Each structure stands twice: as structure tokens, then as C-alpha cells.
Length: 122
View 1 (cartoon, rainbow, N blue to C red):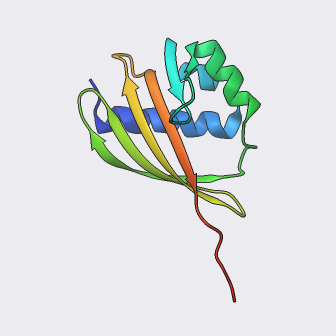
View 2: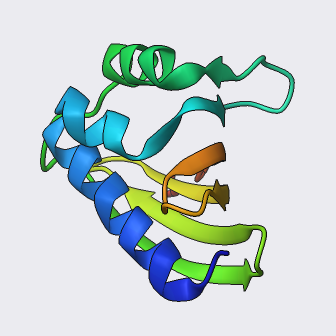
């Protein structure tokens, strides 16, 4: 069962892992056989070991970003989250699809991000 408090706790853990890059923090978020989708037509990262490895290959440095989010929809089966990630010189909109198991670990995660256009000055 997924509810907003469980989703919030999972996102808090995700942000903690994002800021620490600690393999234990990352791995604790996902089931052993989880799938992590990063782009519409790319195959997912499969399994906790690959998720941790691939995450660390493209990690952000701790404190490099700020992240704000709000729920779009939370049902018993899935949470849809809209987020904004801000770097010092870039901003991204995020769309997350989160499917948690009974223990609050993610069994399927979709993370798509879209870069905001740079402001134009004349």
C-alpha cells in the first residue's frame, strides 16, 4: 500500500542518498530486483547492485542541488511526483513514478528530467 506519508519518507531517503552518495543509503531505497527507468526508450537499471553502481557513475556532489516536490497523484499502487531540481546554473523539471513494496522500498522507479531553457537577454 502506498500513501503520502510512505512516499514522503521514501523521498526523504532518496534526497539523503542523493546528498551522501553512500551506497548503503542508495541501496536501502530499492528492492533487490527493482527496476529504475531513466529515459523513455532506454532499458531500466535492473537490481539493487546495478542501481547503486549506475547512480554513482552519474552522481551529483553533496550540496550541489536543491530539490522541491509535490504529489500529482498517490494511489494504493503508485505515486506520481512533480519535482524541481536546481543547480547553481541549471534547473530541471522532474517527473517521478514510484511503486513501493509493503516494506516501503521501491520496486519500480521512473525518473525523467527536462532541462529548463536558459533565460534569454537582449
